[in-house]
Image (tube, rainbow, N blue to C red; front, side):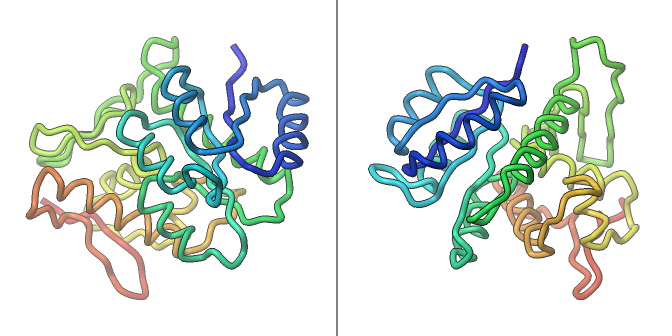
Length: 233
């Protein structure tokens, strides 16, 4: 079955041109011109990935993402203007998996979509016939790659695909420092460019999610100017 992509933007020219590109590549596409209609549609008929503009009428992309994250962990890419750096970071903190600045290359958007879908498929490979990659257990942390689940002290931690891959990259080698470039490669792939600050925003959100189930969570350490590491038990 071809993947279904939702495009949410009040610019009908963008909706038309991007839809044509995605459909030509074999994707199914649903389009929405405002956040409220998108929320209703996406909750009623979930998709494989959503591309959201930030500034839209009736409900902006930030609120839409926040509402979606209460019910879904579908991959989300934000479209932002170049002068919306703060919005980009806020979107990542709310749980976006990636962002692209306008004006953007449709080829770049297509590659980002494919990369996220590949990671999402790998994270949910159980039952698909793909060989399971097993469970990573580090003390109170348990990551199940086949089910794409994360638990801390027996409690579920809801992570997006990108967040899951970041935690996995750190937890696989406790005590070893991962610089931002290494974490970008782990979470996005070697051929995708992402600003270093994107990783910082993801790590902040991961910590926040763990602290929602354990106020004392401190296993991900920052080494300023170097990178991050997962504490040795």
